[in-house]
Image 1 (cartoon, helix red, strand yellow):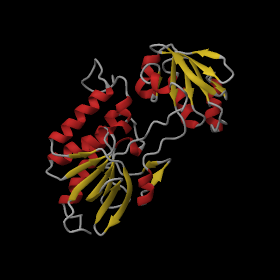
Image 2 (cartoon, helix red, strand yellow):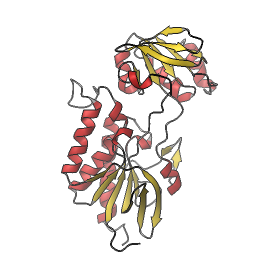
Image 3 (cartoon, one colour):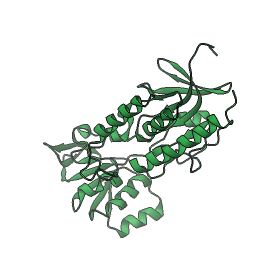
Image 4 (tube, one colour):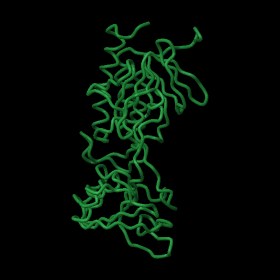
Length: 304
């Protein structure tokens, strides 16, 4: 180890609500904090409008809220680096994080890597995100009340999103975009009972002017729709978690209610835990994890 290399008290991986909340609390506790990640990877960055967060009844643009969080964490004293972590390893009593450009040493690590929206790779998806295309039913389902909606995906994740959409509209169907469906039998039966149809058609592109109006299948047929929810595959919290040896379940990092993982000095908060997948739950879990980090560093658990 380079004796001149700066050692941070905590390296936070992820620049979403969980990572920035943890940065705020830990920096205010007097710890040396660095946050690594890309703000564009936060699902909040692509959220068109957030209307279910405490104290903001009129709603707020997701990207604007994220920028406020970045500024707040920085003002509290946290260091922010828009660099993606590519490697992690234990080094003596510390953790070494490598990005494409730098190496960082930390006494503790807090995973706030969230989950990434998986693109459908269908033409014009980017054009209509926030204008008819969304990724989270719990976040945006309300905007599609009594509308004609399609879910794009082939597995249980897509099926559950479709079932949740029934709280807002009865006109819901699932397109696998050419892939074989891999929905478990018990969930498939629920879809049948609720009259949610499964279509294997390959989709060529999304169509519309200022907002989404239809999808075009590869055979040229257009299907009029009001909205699309992309639910491809199962989002992963972080491949680095596997490399470090963290316990996971269904691609999410396992932890106690206080954000403690199976490895001493490694903590987790937010969507990476798989719990809630909402801004409110991300913030709350980050606060709990921050208290655990402070306890670990200041109450003698960390060994110099």
